[in-house]
Amino acid sequence: MARAHQGPAGQDGDDLLDLLDTLDIDDGTPDGSAPMPLDELAVLARSLMDQHGLHDWAFAWDRAVRRAGATRWKSRTISLSKPLMLRFPREDARDTVLHEVAHALVGHRHGHDATWKAKAAEIGARPQRCFDASIAQVDGDWTGTCPRGHTHSRHRAPKHAVVSCGLCAPKKFDRRYRLTWTWRGVAVLTPGSRVELVGDDAWRGSRGRVTKLLDTRYAVTLDSGRRLHVPFDLAASARR
Ligand SMILES: [Zn+2]
Ligand SMILES: [Zn+2]
Image (cartoon, rainbow, N blue to C red; front, side):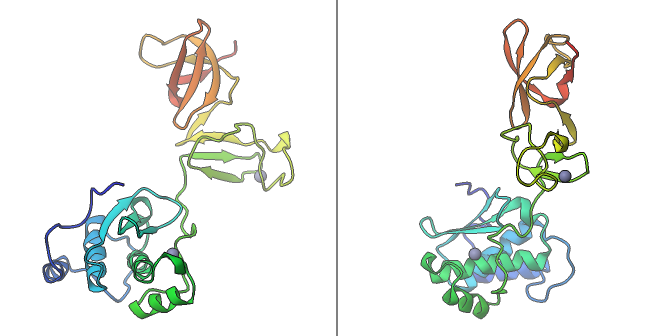
């Protein structure tokens, strides 16, 4: 597990509270919807964990995008999603910490049951709100757009590049509503497409065929038989 940001090491609760004061953290009343800087949030998380007796628990960041925080009882770690915390209003970030603190305090068997809810309410978390589910979806790098304009966001390359819009054709594939894909805004060709490499290197001008979409690149087999992984913007559609 990544433990790069555990907050200031070796400081006790009082030092951290002093630090909180100097950082001018609004530690109670929600104000505004601007996200909290991550270093501030790490200090706040450590402080809230200590306030509730989780002195021997570690704080960490993670890269999750489908849930805001996680509690790991085995390693005694509470982690928060960096990508989501960069987007959450500060009151929601604070609430996420308390949500996880409540999980840590009552134990994993309780999930989001009445015991957890009571603890969450007791420590000031909003018990009705659970960020474990994907409340705030971060848009993925991949966007599929149907001819009628619906967009579908993905974090990974689509397993099946040829799919139709689930809104226009909910039951089965319908080629009239095929999605066209972009990766970070760059149009992505479907596997089978002929391509010419346009990078500024020895492969420039080589032609071949896209065999697969990887998360950030094409797998291309050149006409010479050579196989390459090519960034999406370095392969242009070719007629033949
Ligand atoms: Zn939860
Ligand atoms: Zn559609």
